[in-house]
Length: 339
Image (cartoon, rainbow, N blue to C red; front, side, top):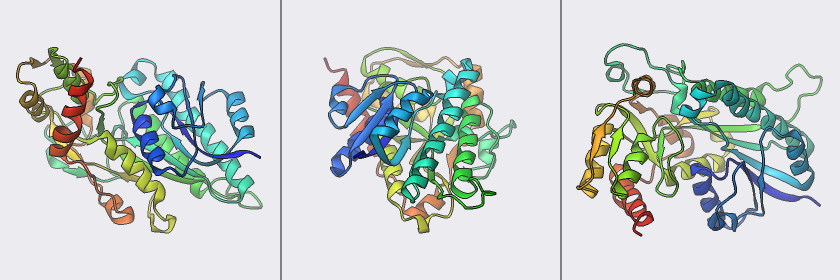
């Protein structure tokens, strides 16, 4: 008999680490994970099996289906924003085709089990593309889910299309078939910039915030690649895992949409620099602006409207800016480099 599992792709990444720890703490679920990279021993101990392999490997996915009965999928695997700009074709393959294949797998599992398989998908602030006019962020304060969906990066395009694919598989999959199939239960959160104290930054456009912290904790100088006034919303990594699990646990009848904004706090690069220097006063943090990355940040909202998430499933961040820096980020990153 196949073992029932929750399947997590991209498990070795920043969100994967936090999610696995949160799920393991619940103690009532078996985890199957997948990534191109191995899991660290402190995380691997929480999973039934970790599969090192490519999400696009259909034979590997077929093997997984023969061995395991999948209760839910947390699809975290992706090629991130800055990396995607250097290899847009590969980004499309990984981010879009990988997601489509998993949605197809979830649809087949839903049919076989005669109940919707939950598919939890982390989307991104990169789906937005603000107008290229002066002070646009001042004109449009907190952006709602359906506003300015005009991404200017391959990563943003990928994420927006995958949201649409998820909505299709949930509401319209095989709509012309003689007998309507059981649909997928697709749920997505659009994350702001995420900051982790546990893992190092891996190429995201918002990574100037964690890069600044990690460099300062090591006593290294840092040249911030965006302007001092650059503002976007952020969230501490524990809240990211919390949001995914809270949405996953929400009754389906309470949900009025498939995609939800979430946010915790909004800071400029200068405000982040000030907080970092308060903790590490001897380090040098300057501005070495990368105009193309700055242009991407300029196209993202200064903040997000998460009122739908708050209303439909009770979303509320546990870490505001003060708690994120004072209790989570600075103590844990300092400890990481203490020796």
